[in-house]
Figure (cartoon, rainbow, N blue to C red):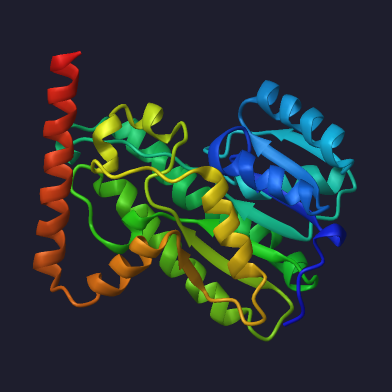
Length: 275
């Protein structure tokens, strides 16, 4: 594959109002890509658009949209077509998680999580994939290290990210005869608003958090390869963990994660009690 000409791209980024999505927008703009920023919070998107236009001189369009709505991807494609924007790359960062035993979770919140983390990602990917295959752009879907193991107390989130991993790796294989580069990116715990939404700082398992800059830089290093991989975990330790997980039985894997998330929950209670 030839290297991506980022200055010739118009990249749509979902979840662009904060965290990894906002950092993808910044690094894409620095590489010369025009942008379409998508998230619910219009004020944040507008502020980021002004920042990126001033810093890099790229065109930045803002599309405020709740990706939890039905057929969100098709609505998004219709809106960019209405505006005459030719999207050539897509980065799906939108998503959130919750933390707690499944039987205690709010059913509506779980349904919203599946709608954003799974359904919208599939719908956005499908709505744009034909035009991406006709270009020399990229499709990046952000999963998580949680994709590699079932995660008690984050059961639905981990299952959703496992879906993203499997789905995107399959698209990578399907797209090898096209000019489209497909990558699923799996960060570990990252210093973003994710844990504010989760409602439990201890959901990171007590591990150090990566920076959004590190996460996005890893994605570009993978995409800039002559033969990009289908998936990439962020950080050497996480990549070693992915290899190690393959040696575990399913029983040992889920019990390992239960021990980690159990300690995380206990640590969170202890920290709150001490505060």
